[in-house]
Length: 516
Image (cartoon, rainbow, N blue to C red; front, top):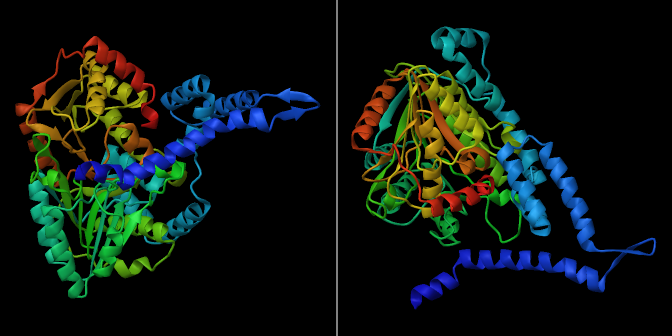
């Protein structure tokens, strides 16, 4: 009974109830207008439904002529045709391109400030062209779309399991001298967080500046509403990203899905892991949880510092001196290759679908093989065609997805993508031991990406994300070795077919996936 009351009076329940009330009021308003406040033009009664229909047609024309992916256009046209009132309301909830004016204005201001730290000189560019050869364009795209540079003198350590990541993270946190920045989609109280919090509190007492930013909606059922306040009382500067209030607004659709830790501007962690026990197998809901990450040491950490401060300052509406957190000198490290940590986010800030385009660039340039791990495989025609074309031209394309679902509907949607890919020659395996949450790509022993970016609409279109593109780093050998191990234990899904009923349900749901 206690648990039932907790669910009923939880913040999520109240938020959902408030939104449903708003939707209900909006749907009842046409009836109220027709019966109590009729609209009359030149003595002619005009039903509110007619006005809504005209507005819906105008909206459909706008959608069709927008740069929205074709799958998204189809979704919204169908919704507006079948449910015009509901469709118009939901459109402005999910698709409105403009963020709050104060956020956009401040984002532009912060971005302008950051540019001075990311100037690329001709000598640097010429050196990159020489080192990268035919892959230069991959990194140049990131620079031109985000402003984030590519660096040598950066050591990458591949962390093949959540447990390995956790141990490395704690060790580096204990070594912090000046500051610790942590940005995560989910934080959940438990053994993992308690261990981290203990170190953070110790570091605060030692005079280390500690900041924690977490996504409010990502933690809505996991943390109390006053969690940030409690951390601030401990001396940990804490911010809830994009605080979720029960008012219909498109801005709530854009969540901070990044998972980064930066220490002293010298060490950075980027991974698929949130700060919760299931990610390091202290809890086991879905079999063994396979996650991966990287530890970055050296020059490329600069990108991560600026990415964190950019979102943190936009959220706080306070511009600070970024140079304070950038090391005056970067210690030389024993490393090979080139590294570019990069960010992605809603198109109204980034102007490009950066994460998807990075994936597309790699797939389209692959010659020998491209291997992928992703927990969710719900992709648009561009990615589907790119993967199929790569397989048809003889590239070894393999994708590893979970064998045990964390979300049954999403699991079936992922499986519904198999058939088209397999018919083109893409090989799909499922992680036999449980749930694979790692988001990574490796190509031709030369390129790799590790980060937070799933192969699904939410990551590629809506969320703030991060990844690291690597060229011929030592870590790529370890990533390849891990893939080869996964292939030996993976369940080959060749010939797999969903049953007709599930296939039908997935076909219907897929129409709406661009807004999921």
